[in-house]
Length: 252
Ligand code: ADP
Ligand code: MG
Image 1: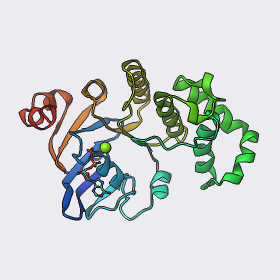
Image 2: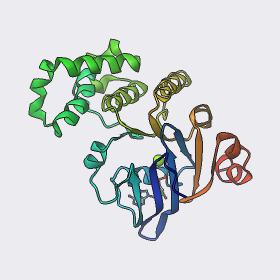
Image 3: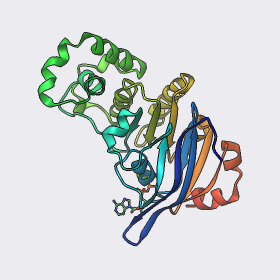
C-alpha cells in the first residue's frame, strides 16, 4: 500500500542478535509532517529499530527507505546528510566545549561535509552560524547558558542542547529516543511544549518514548512494539483502547 505522503518506510525489517530476534516483521510507514511515536516496554526493540533507521545497525533482512532513497547499507553520516537527525537516549555531545560551540558544530559539519578538531579555531569567525546557533538556543530556552561548558549542564539541559544541535541541521526527519528520559516533570513539560512548537513547523518526527503522557500529548500516530513485533498501531485513541496494548505495555 504505497502512500505518496510516506516519507519513511521501514519495510519487512528483521534484526537478530545471535539467537535473539530483536526485531521481527517490522513494517512502519511515517507520513510527512506527522509525529509518529513508537512505544513499548523495556527491551521491546525500540532503540534497535532507531539504530537500524539511522544506519548504526544493519538489519538482518528488510530495508529502510527515506524519501525514495534506500538507506540500508549507507553509513550513519550519509543518512544524516540525506536529512535525518537524531537525539539519542544518552546524549552525544562535546563535553569540553561551550554550549554555543556544540550547537555550531553540526551546522559547520553539514556545510563543509566534515568537522575536525582543528577546525575549532575557525568557529569564532563563523558569524552566520553563530547567529543561527544562538537563535536555536533561544528556541530551546538556553541562550543564557551559551557560554557554559557542556559537561556542566544538567541532564535536561544537555538534552535540550542536543535538540538544538539537531534543529540547526534543518532535518526533514527528526528521530528522538526517549527525549524526556531522566527529566523532572517540569523539564518534561517544557520539552513537550518545545516539541509541539517544532511540530507546528511541519517537521516529521519519530519519537521513541516510555512516558505515556508525552506520547499522547504529541503523537499523530502510535506504533506499539512488544518483543520485537509491532502489536498495534493507529491514532492515540485507537491505541489507548486496544486490549493487546494494555496487556503488553501497560501491564509490562
Ligand atoms: P528498548 O529500546 O525497547 O528498551 P532495545 O532495542 O534496546 O530495547 O533492545 C531489544 C533487545 O535486544 C533486548 O533484549 C536487548 O537486550 C537486545 N539487544 C539490544 N542491542 C543488542 C546488541 N548490540 N547485542 C545483543 N543484544 C542486543
Ligand atoms: Mg531503548
